Length: 260
Image (cartoon, rainbow, N blue to C red; front, side, top):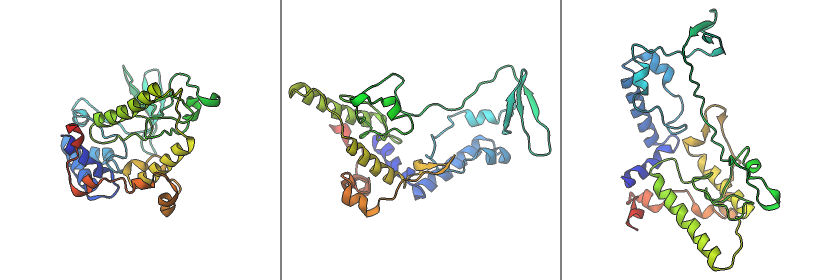
């Protein structure tokens, strides 16, 4: 199972055959669950690649939209009223009020990694302020200016496909090695160098340009400065190359870590 899930990584390469195949398959599934309702399918079918946003909805969601006691409305909301919701239908028509007994707002959630509690590190650096706009960490584990601070599934963690347990186990091994070193060698604190975090994230963003996750469909395509050959010559993480292992390229066993 781990081997199969880990193969899904190639789905996220924008324009890849795997991406196109999955997009076609998901489209067929959506149309089937919508009961062949062409108009509803056209309104719900995403125009962005699979994986650009979290893969959803779950089982039963599309079926529910096609139920007889459900009306799917896509008109913009003008305002909430004392009786329900006022929406704006197509041009040349007036707003329509839909009366409701209960209104549930589902507008997403905060995906910023900044902690909910005050976290102050070297030179009074606040992690909440440091990560207010963009979050950067080393391997998704360590934050700059934060001594002895380790996290799981932080910024740029090896997540997005496959099993979470393998990534958590690798992170645990790394963190425990540092804990052992600190405890046994008289080290008071360790902190990742800011320039290391900067270069790791430069490399990460350059690699992500090839993946569909990097496409921000709400605000256009996100870009970073193109590093080209400079990446391989100057960035310490250039040795990571294309980001693909020999096992993946040769079709090897991708769940090998379970044997350890």
